[in-house]
Image (cartoon, rainbow, N blue to C red):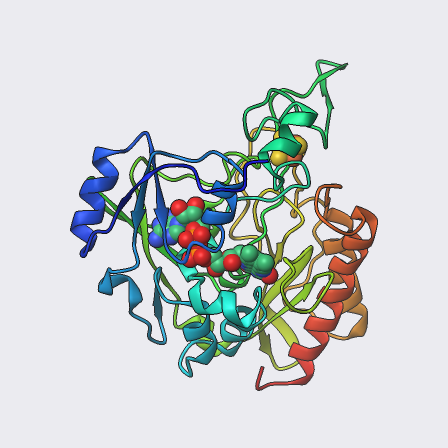
Length: 353
Ligand SMILES: Cc1cc2nc3c(=O)[nH]c(=O)nc-3n(C[C@H](O)[C@H](O)[C@H](O)COP(=O)(O)OP(=O)(O)OC[C@H]3O[C@@H](n4cnc5c(N)ncnc54)[C@H](O)[C@@H]3O)c2cc1C
Ligand code: SF4
């Protein structure tokens, strides 16, 4: 059984410019290493390892944190303890993994986390015995073995539905965060919601050699009520199997803005922007959920219990978790509604949230 790290060359740049140059030099065969809490376990399982690993641990520019921007190299524990970031973001960070993992794990690693699946997060031996799968070494999916093409059921050799499991991604998307990347082509800033795209293999639109530098929060993120709730088998250590982040702005008792983002139930985080201004791009296949299908009218309405129930029902109806992480999909789907209802009730009743 292979549980040892494979051989790779470790590069330890001291500046972002050096890291960018190394990423360009090894563009077809490198991984970035931040805290290593996701990358190294995956390497030990023989999951898509590369020959060059570029460590970001010594780059001071990535470790800056203030009320409006968080560097990719800031650890989860530093986010948790920071008094200037929105409480919802600190609270979300505080419930990731375990205290020890939060000492090493970073924002960048969390946002770029690989998707998870029962058939993928296994040892090399285990996966080889099953014949591998699309996401590593194989040519088929064990979770969705058949798909419909032109009215015929055919072998699924195209779409991976591995689950996106970052907690901070949906929370930051609900708050309208943007992400800044750097490469030899310069810097580019995108809405975090637009960055995530595609199936469980593609996961996001990252240009060759790009490094995540920081996430920026709009002023608005500090003015709205926001919060995070997650479902996991255990409160500590375990990955989320469903998560809900929300940002709510009220005008008196009426909804002015509402953004709810789901995590851990699809191949990317999924935003429900009830103002319908930020829509999800077409992911190119039909196995993913559509948050805007039959979306109820919410804006301008009184946020009473009945409206909260309508919103929660909508989120629950649209969620389509797959049987590839712990807990049954039906239960996770139901919990998307339950968590949404609990969170919105708390946000409505507690102006300080
Ligand atoms: C037992 C256990 C439980 C966990 N529970 C949770 C949980 O509840 N919720 C959750 O969200 N996560 C969880 N995690 C996952 C992980 O620990 C955290 O998400 C952590 O924040 C990852 O950060 P890291 O710096 O260690 O990432 P790394 O392992 O260093 O990197 C992860 C990925 O991100 C890429 N990367 C890192 N930095 C950058 C950058 N600046 N630019 C571009 N790419 C980059 C790496 O190349 C790699 O592909 C858990 C992990 C373990 C082992
Ligand atoms: S969803 Fe299918 S292709 Fe993707 S990791 Fe799981 S088994 Fe592999």
